[in-house]
Length: 224
Image 1 (cartoon, rainbow, N blue to C red):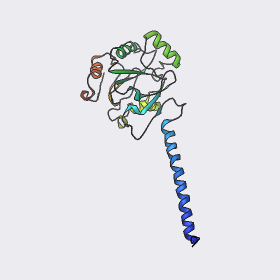
Image 2: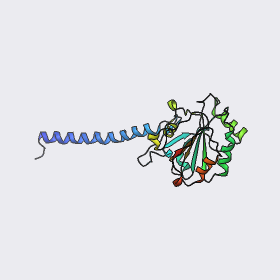
Image 3: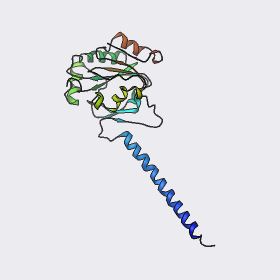
Image 4: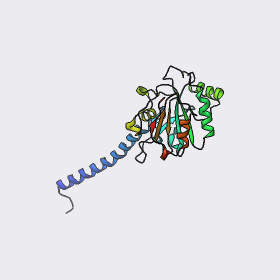
């Protein structure tokens, strides 16, 4: 026979069209998911998720530094990270001195990351440029500083919503209540401890946690 029966021809045609539509839909779905997870270049903060990433690691996150550059926290893998919400007009602002000392003296063990925020007492009202000039000019800060963000729970950036939610980080649900609260992250990007504002960067407790191998640091929170 030179021609297929009509019903077989229709079935074959429908199958071919169906396959074509499915193949076109898959890339569109992937592209859509990627766009949702990475955000846009204009976004201040975004989550960077892949199937191979540890969902309880800060390495999932990409943030914007004080110069407007996007920074993946993956770059700090292998050292502990001390994440601090900072302010320039706070009674705790002199902690910048100890944070700088910590970042220099223990550079092989820990990296300090400062996230300026105006959430508490309106004590960080300046622009990124003003904050950078203040920190470098008054306290000689050389550790990484980031774009001024919100860390208060209702408006917090994705990184801080992760840090303050035990369902996400697997360890604790402590959230910043004032400027200069601190989170210690281990060498694999996992949350280890939370320290209230009054715990200074060079306090024996915090130093001990930094110098102790992560496998021996019991996940806990430090109270005032």
